Image (tube, rainbow, N blue to C red; front, side):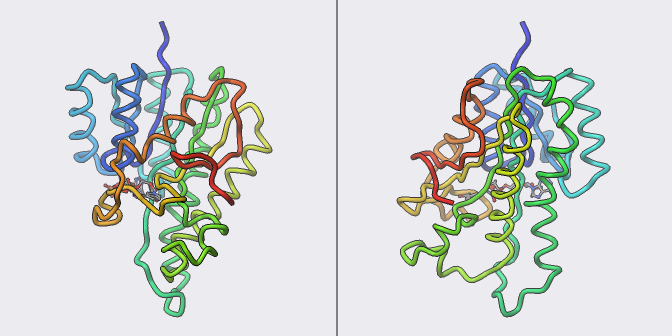
Length: 244
Ligand SMILES: NC(=O)c1ccc[n+]([C@@H]2O[C@H](COP(=O)([O-])OP(=O)(O)OC[C@H]3O[C@@H](n4cnc5c(N)ncnc54)[C@H](OP(=O)(O)O)[C@@H]3O)[C@@H](O)[C@H]2O)c1
């Protein structure tokens, strides 16, 4: 029997690791992406010890060479990729807009915008060989104009340019992929709860979030397990649709 195959980027910790753990628990073959081999090895060994079918994939989403090598490695193990989760993300340095330089934007965009495009582009041939390929893009409520312009949302008072605009770009890129490639589902999640203002406790926010990584990855699982007749080009959190 052939297993569902999934690649998760940035899966050595946080939401990516939890998503990988949950896919492994579902009996899927998990390609665990990690830019640091030792951290990735430790994460993969832990999942394997719990019975997961997991392959460590060294993968820095900012490097063309690393992404190409990752694609070659995955292709040694499978002739198709059912699910790609573009999870790796960088928060930037919360620089005030007045002090933000193009360099600050570039570093964040390289991971959060060019990264998912680099990885998606490289893995398209493997995705196109799957019967019901699904790409899950990990965005943020901060990528939503509706959320950022709502004075009741904390993010409206968090003054920075790089992170929120990178996730807004990712949202548009995902919608454009969905329109252009109807044979593949391209959808977006935020690991928070927009209506309650809650987010997930991870290293990225100094574990100040109110949700567990399991709660935060609920929408990852929902979109990764969509049927062939499921939607493409949607943006959700664990409670439902997120306004653009
Ligand atoms: N936590 C939340 O509530 C929340 C809310 C909205 C959106 N998100 C999004 O959720 C995703 C996961 O974040 P998290 O909260 O789980 O944070 P995290 O614990 O800091 O994990 C981030 C992951 O991304 C990896 N990464 C960063 N740059 C990378 C690169 N160039 N190549 C490959 N991997 C890279 C990190 O690897 P290293 O360990 O090597 O640094 C780490 O595995 C991100 O896209 C983030 O923007 C999170």
